[in-house]
Length: 266
Ligand SMILES: NC(=O)c1ccc[n+]([C@@H]2O[C@H](COP(=O)([O-])OP(=O)(O)OC[C@H]3O[C@@H](n4cnc5c(N)ncnc54)[C@H](OP(=O)(O)O)[C@@H]3O)[C@@H](O)[C@H]2O)c1
Image (cartoon, rainbow, N blue to C red; front, side):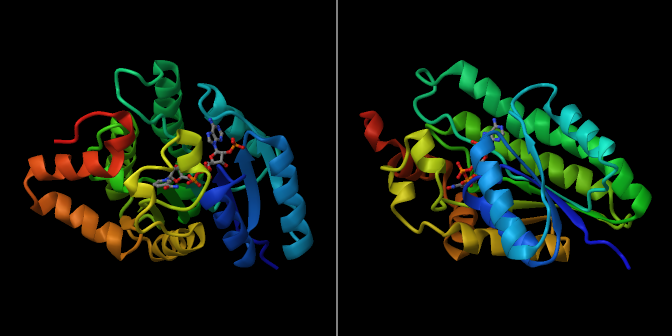
C-alpha cells in the first residue's frame, strides 16, 4: 500500500499556515510542521494527531537564519522522508515609514521571504524532479503586484517571491513539478497586529478569512496554476493598479496604508 503524501508547511503556528496544516491533514497528507513557537507547534501537532490520526514531524526553527534551510533539509534526510508538497508560508511585515522602520527586522524579513524561500526550492526541487512529481506553494501578496508606501520593503520581497516562482516554474514545464504563488490581500490573522497595521483602512475593508484564502491556495496548487490572487476584491485591486495612472495608485495606497503616520496623504 502506498504511504500518504507529505506536505511541509512553514509558519504553521497561526493564521494561513495553521489553516493550511488542517486542510492538508483533512486531505490525508502527513505533515512536517515548521515555525519557531515550540508550545504552539506542540499544540497543533497534538490536535492534528488526535483529530486526523497522523503523526506530524515538528521542526522548531527561526527561518530568518542563514542556516535554516540547510538545517531543515538535513533533518528531513535523517528521517529518510520525501517531501511531496512544500508550502513556503512563513512571513511577517515590518510596517511604517521607511526612514523609521528597523533595518534589522527588514533584513530578517528579506532573508525569510527571499533567501530562505529560494534555498528551500534549491534543496527540495532535485528530489521532486527525480520523482517526476512535486508541488511548491509560495505565499506572495497583493503587494507582489503593487508597490506599497509604508510597506515598501515587504511588498518588494513579495514581488521577488512572485517573480522567482514564475521564472523557476517556467523551467519546470513538463517535469511533473509545479510552483504556484498565492497572493492574499488583507486576511484576518495575527499578521496585522504583529506589524501594528490593524488600524489601517486596508485591514478594515474586505478582510478575508484564512480558511477562504487557504482554500483558494490549495485549489490553485492542485491545478498547478502559476499564480492566484485571493478573492474578487483583491483581483480587482491588482487589475486596477495596472490600469489606473500610477499617481492615483500611489494616492490610494497612501490612504489605505498611511493615515496613522501623520503624513499628509495628498
Ligand atoms: N494576513 C495578511 O493580511 C496577509 C496578506 C498577504 C500576505 N500574507 C502572507 O501570508 C503568510 C502567512 O501570514 P499570516 O497572515 O498567516 O500571519 P501570522 O498569523 O502572523 O502567521 C505567521 C506565521 O509565520 C511564522 N513565522 C514568522 N516569522 C518567522 C520566522 N522568522 N521563522 C519561522 N517562522 C516564522 C509564525 O510562527 P512563529 O511565530 O511560531 O515562528 C506564524 O506561524 C505570510 O507570508 C504573509 O506575508 C498575509
